[in-house]
Length: 46
Image 1 (cartoon, rainbow, N blue to C red):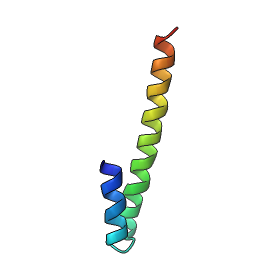
Image 2 (cartoon, rainbow, N blue to C red; image 1 turned 135 degrees about the vertical axis):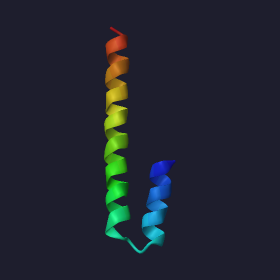
Image 3 (tube, rainbow, N blue to C red; image 1 turned 90 degrees about the vertical axis):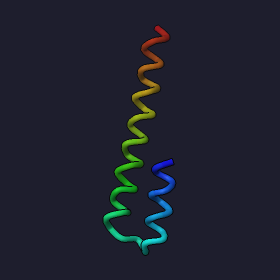
Image 4 (cartoon, rainbow, N blue to C red; image 1 turned 120 degrees about the horizontal axis):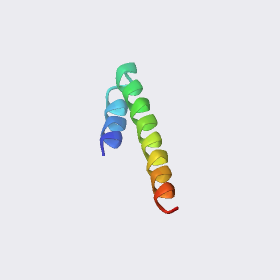
């Protein structure tokens, strides 16, 4: 939800670099969180 709201804020603000950078950092955090979650699930199934 945070990532979506930040993306909308980037569009509304006219692509200010601060909000655009936060949006990219949020997406990186989300991606690594999902990868870590899949890793933890695969370990627990062994």
